[in-house]
Length: 225
Image 1 (cartoon, rainbow, N blue to C red):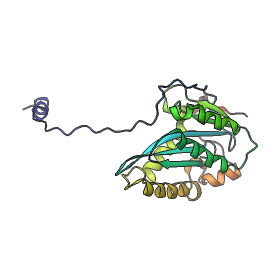
Image 2: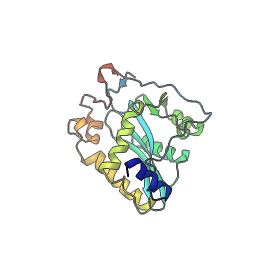
Image 3: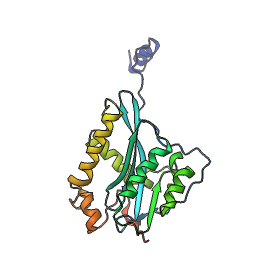
Image 4: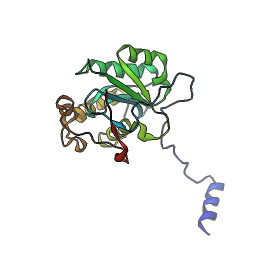
């Protein structure tokens, strides 16, 4: 019996293992809220708190999915704010942004807020809050993950290098693990992309040349604000 016939035999007797879903969608851009232009395409930051990138990822628990909203400084790679909960309503992202604003070191500098075009980030409740705190809104315009490469990279790092990829018992434990992971990521672990400094050190000293996660670095321009 050949391979194809063997698989047909298994399928007819319902013996094939069902294909599992490999990802959980956290971005819903099918909405009528206003979508902002991409202000940072092919540009790199030159200082801390010049550009923040945001995103939502999911954490698997034994009782279902929890959701982690992150706000990261693009220059220092420091996670400025985060919120993990059992829902992904707009309030999840607002809480993460509130923490980031509270943690600012340079509150008088101009700051761009970059996100995908998800429902939470386009919601007027969110955009009005961000703009009332002096942030300039910017959003991805395509479905290329490199339009928000830093946020995507941070998500992957936390999951695969800090244990957030595992199925955790519940949301409360996930919150504790997330807090510990972000503390190590920000304050203790040297990063190769930061010349073996920590994000905290770079955020304060601002003494490194920016390194991009993009595939083609020759087209990048300096972001001036």
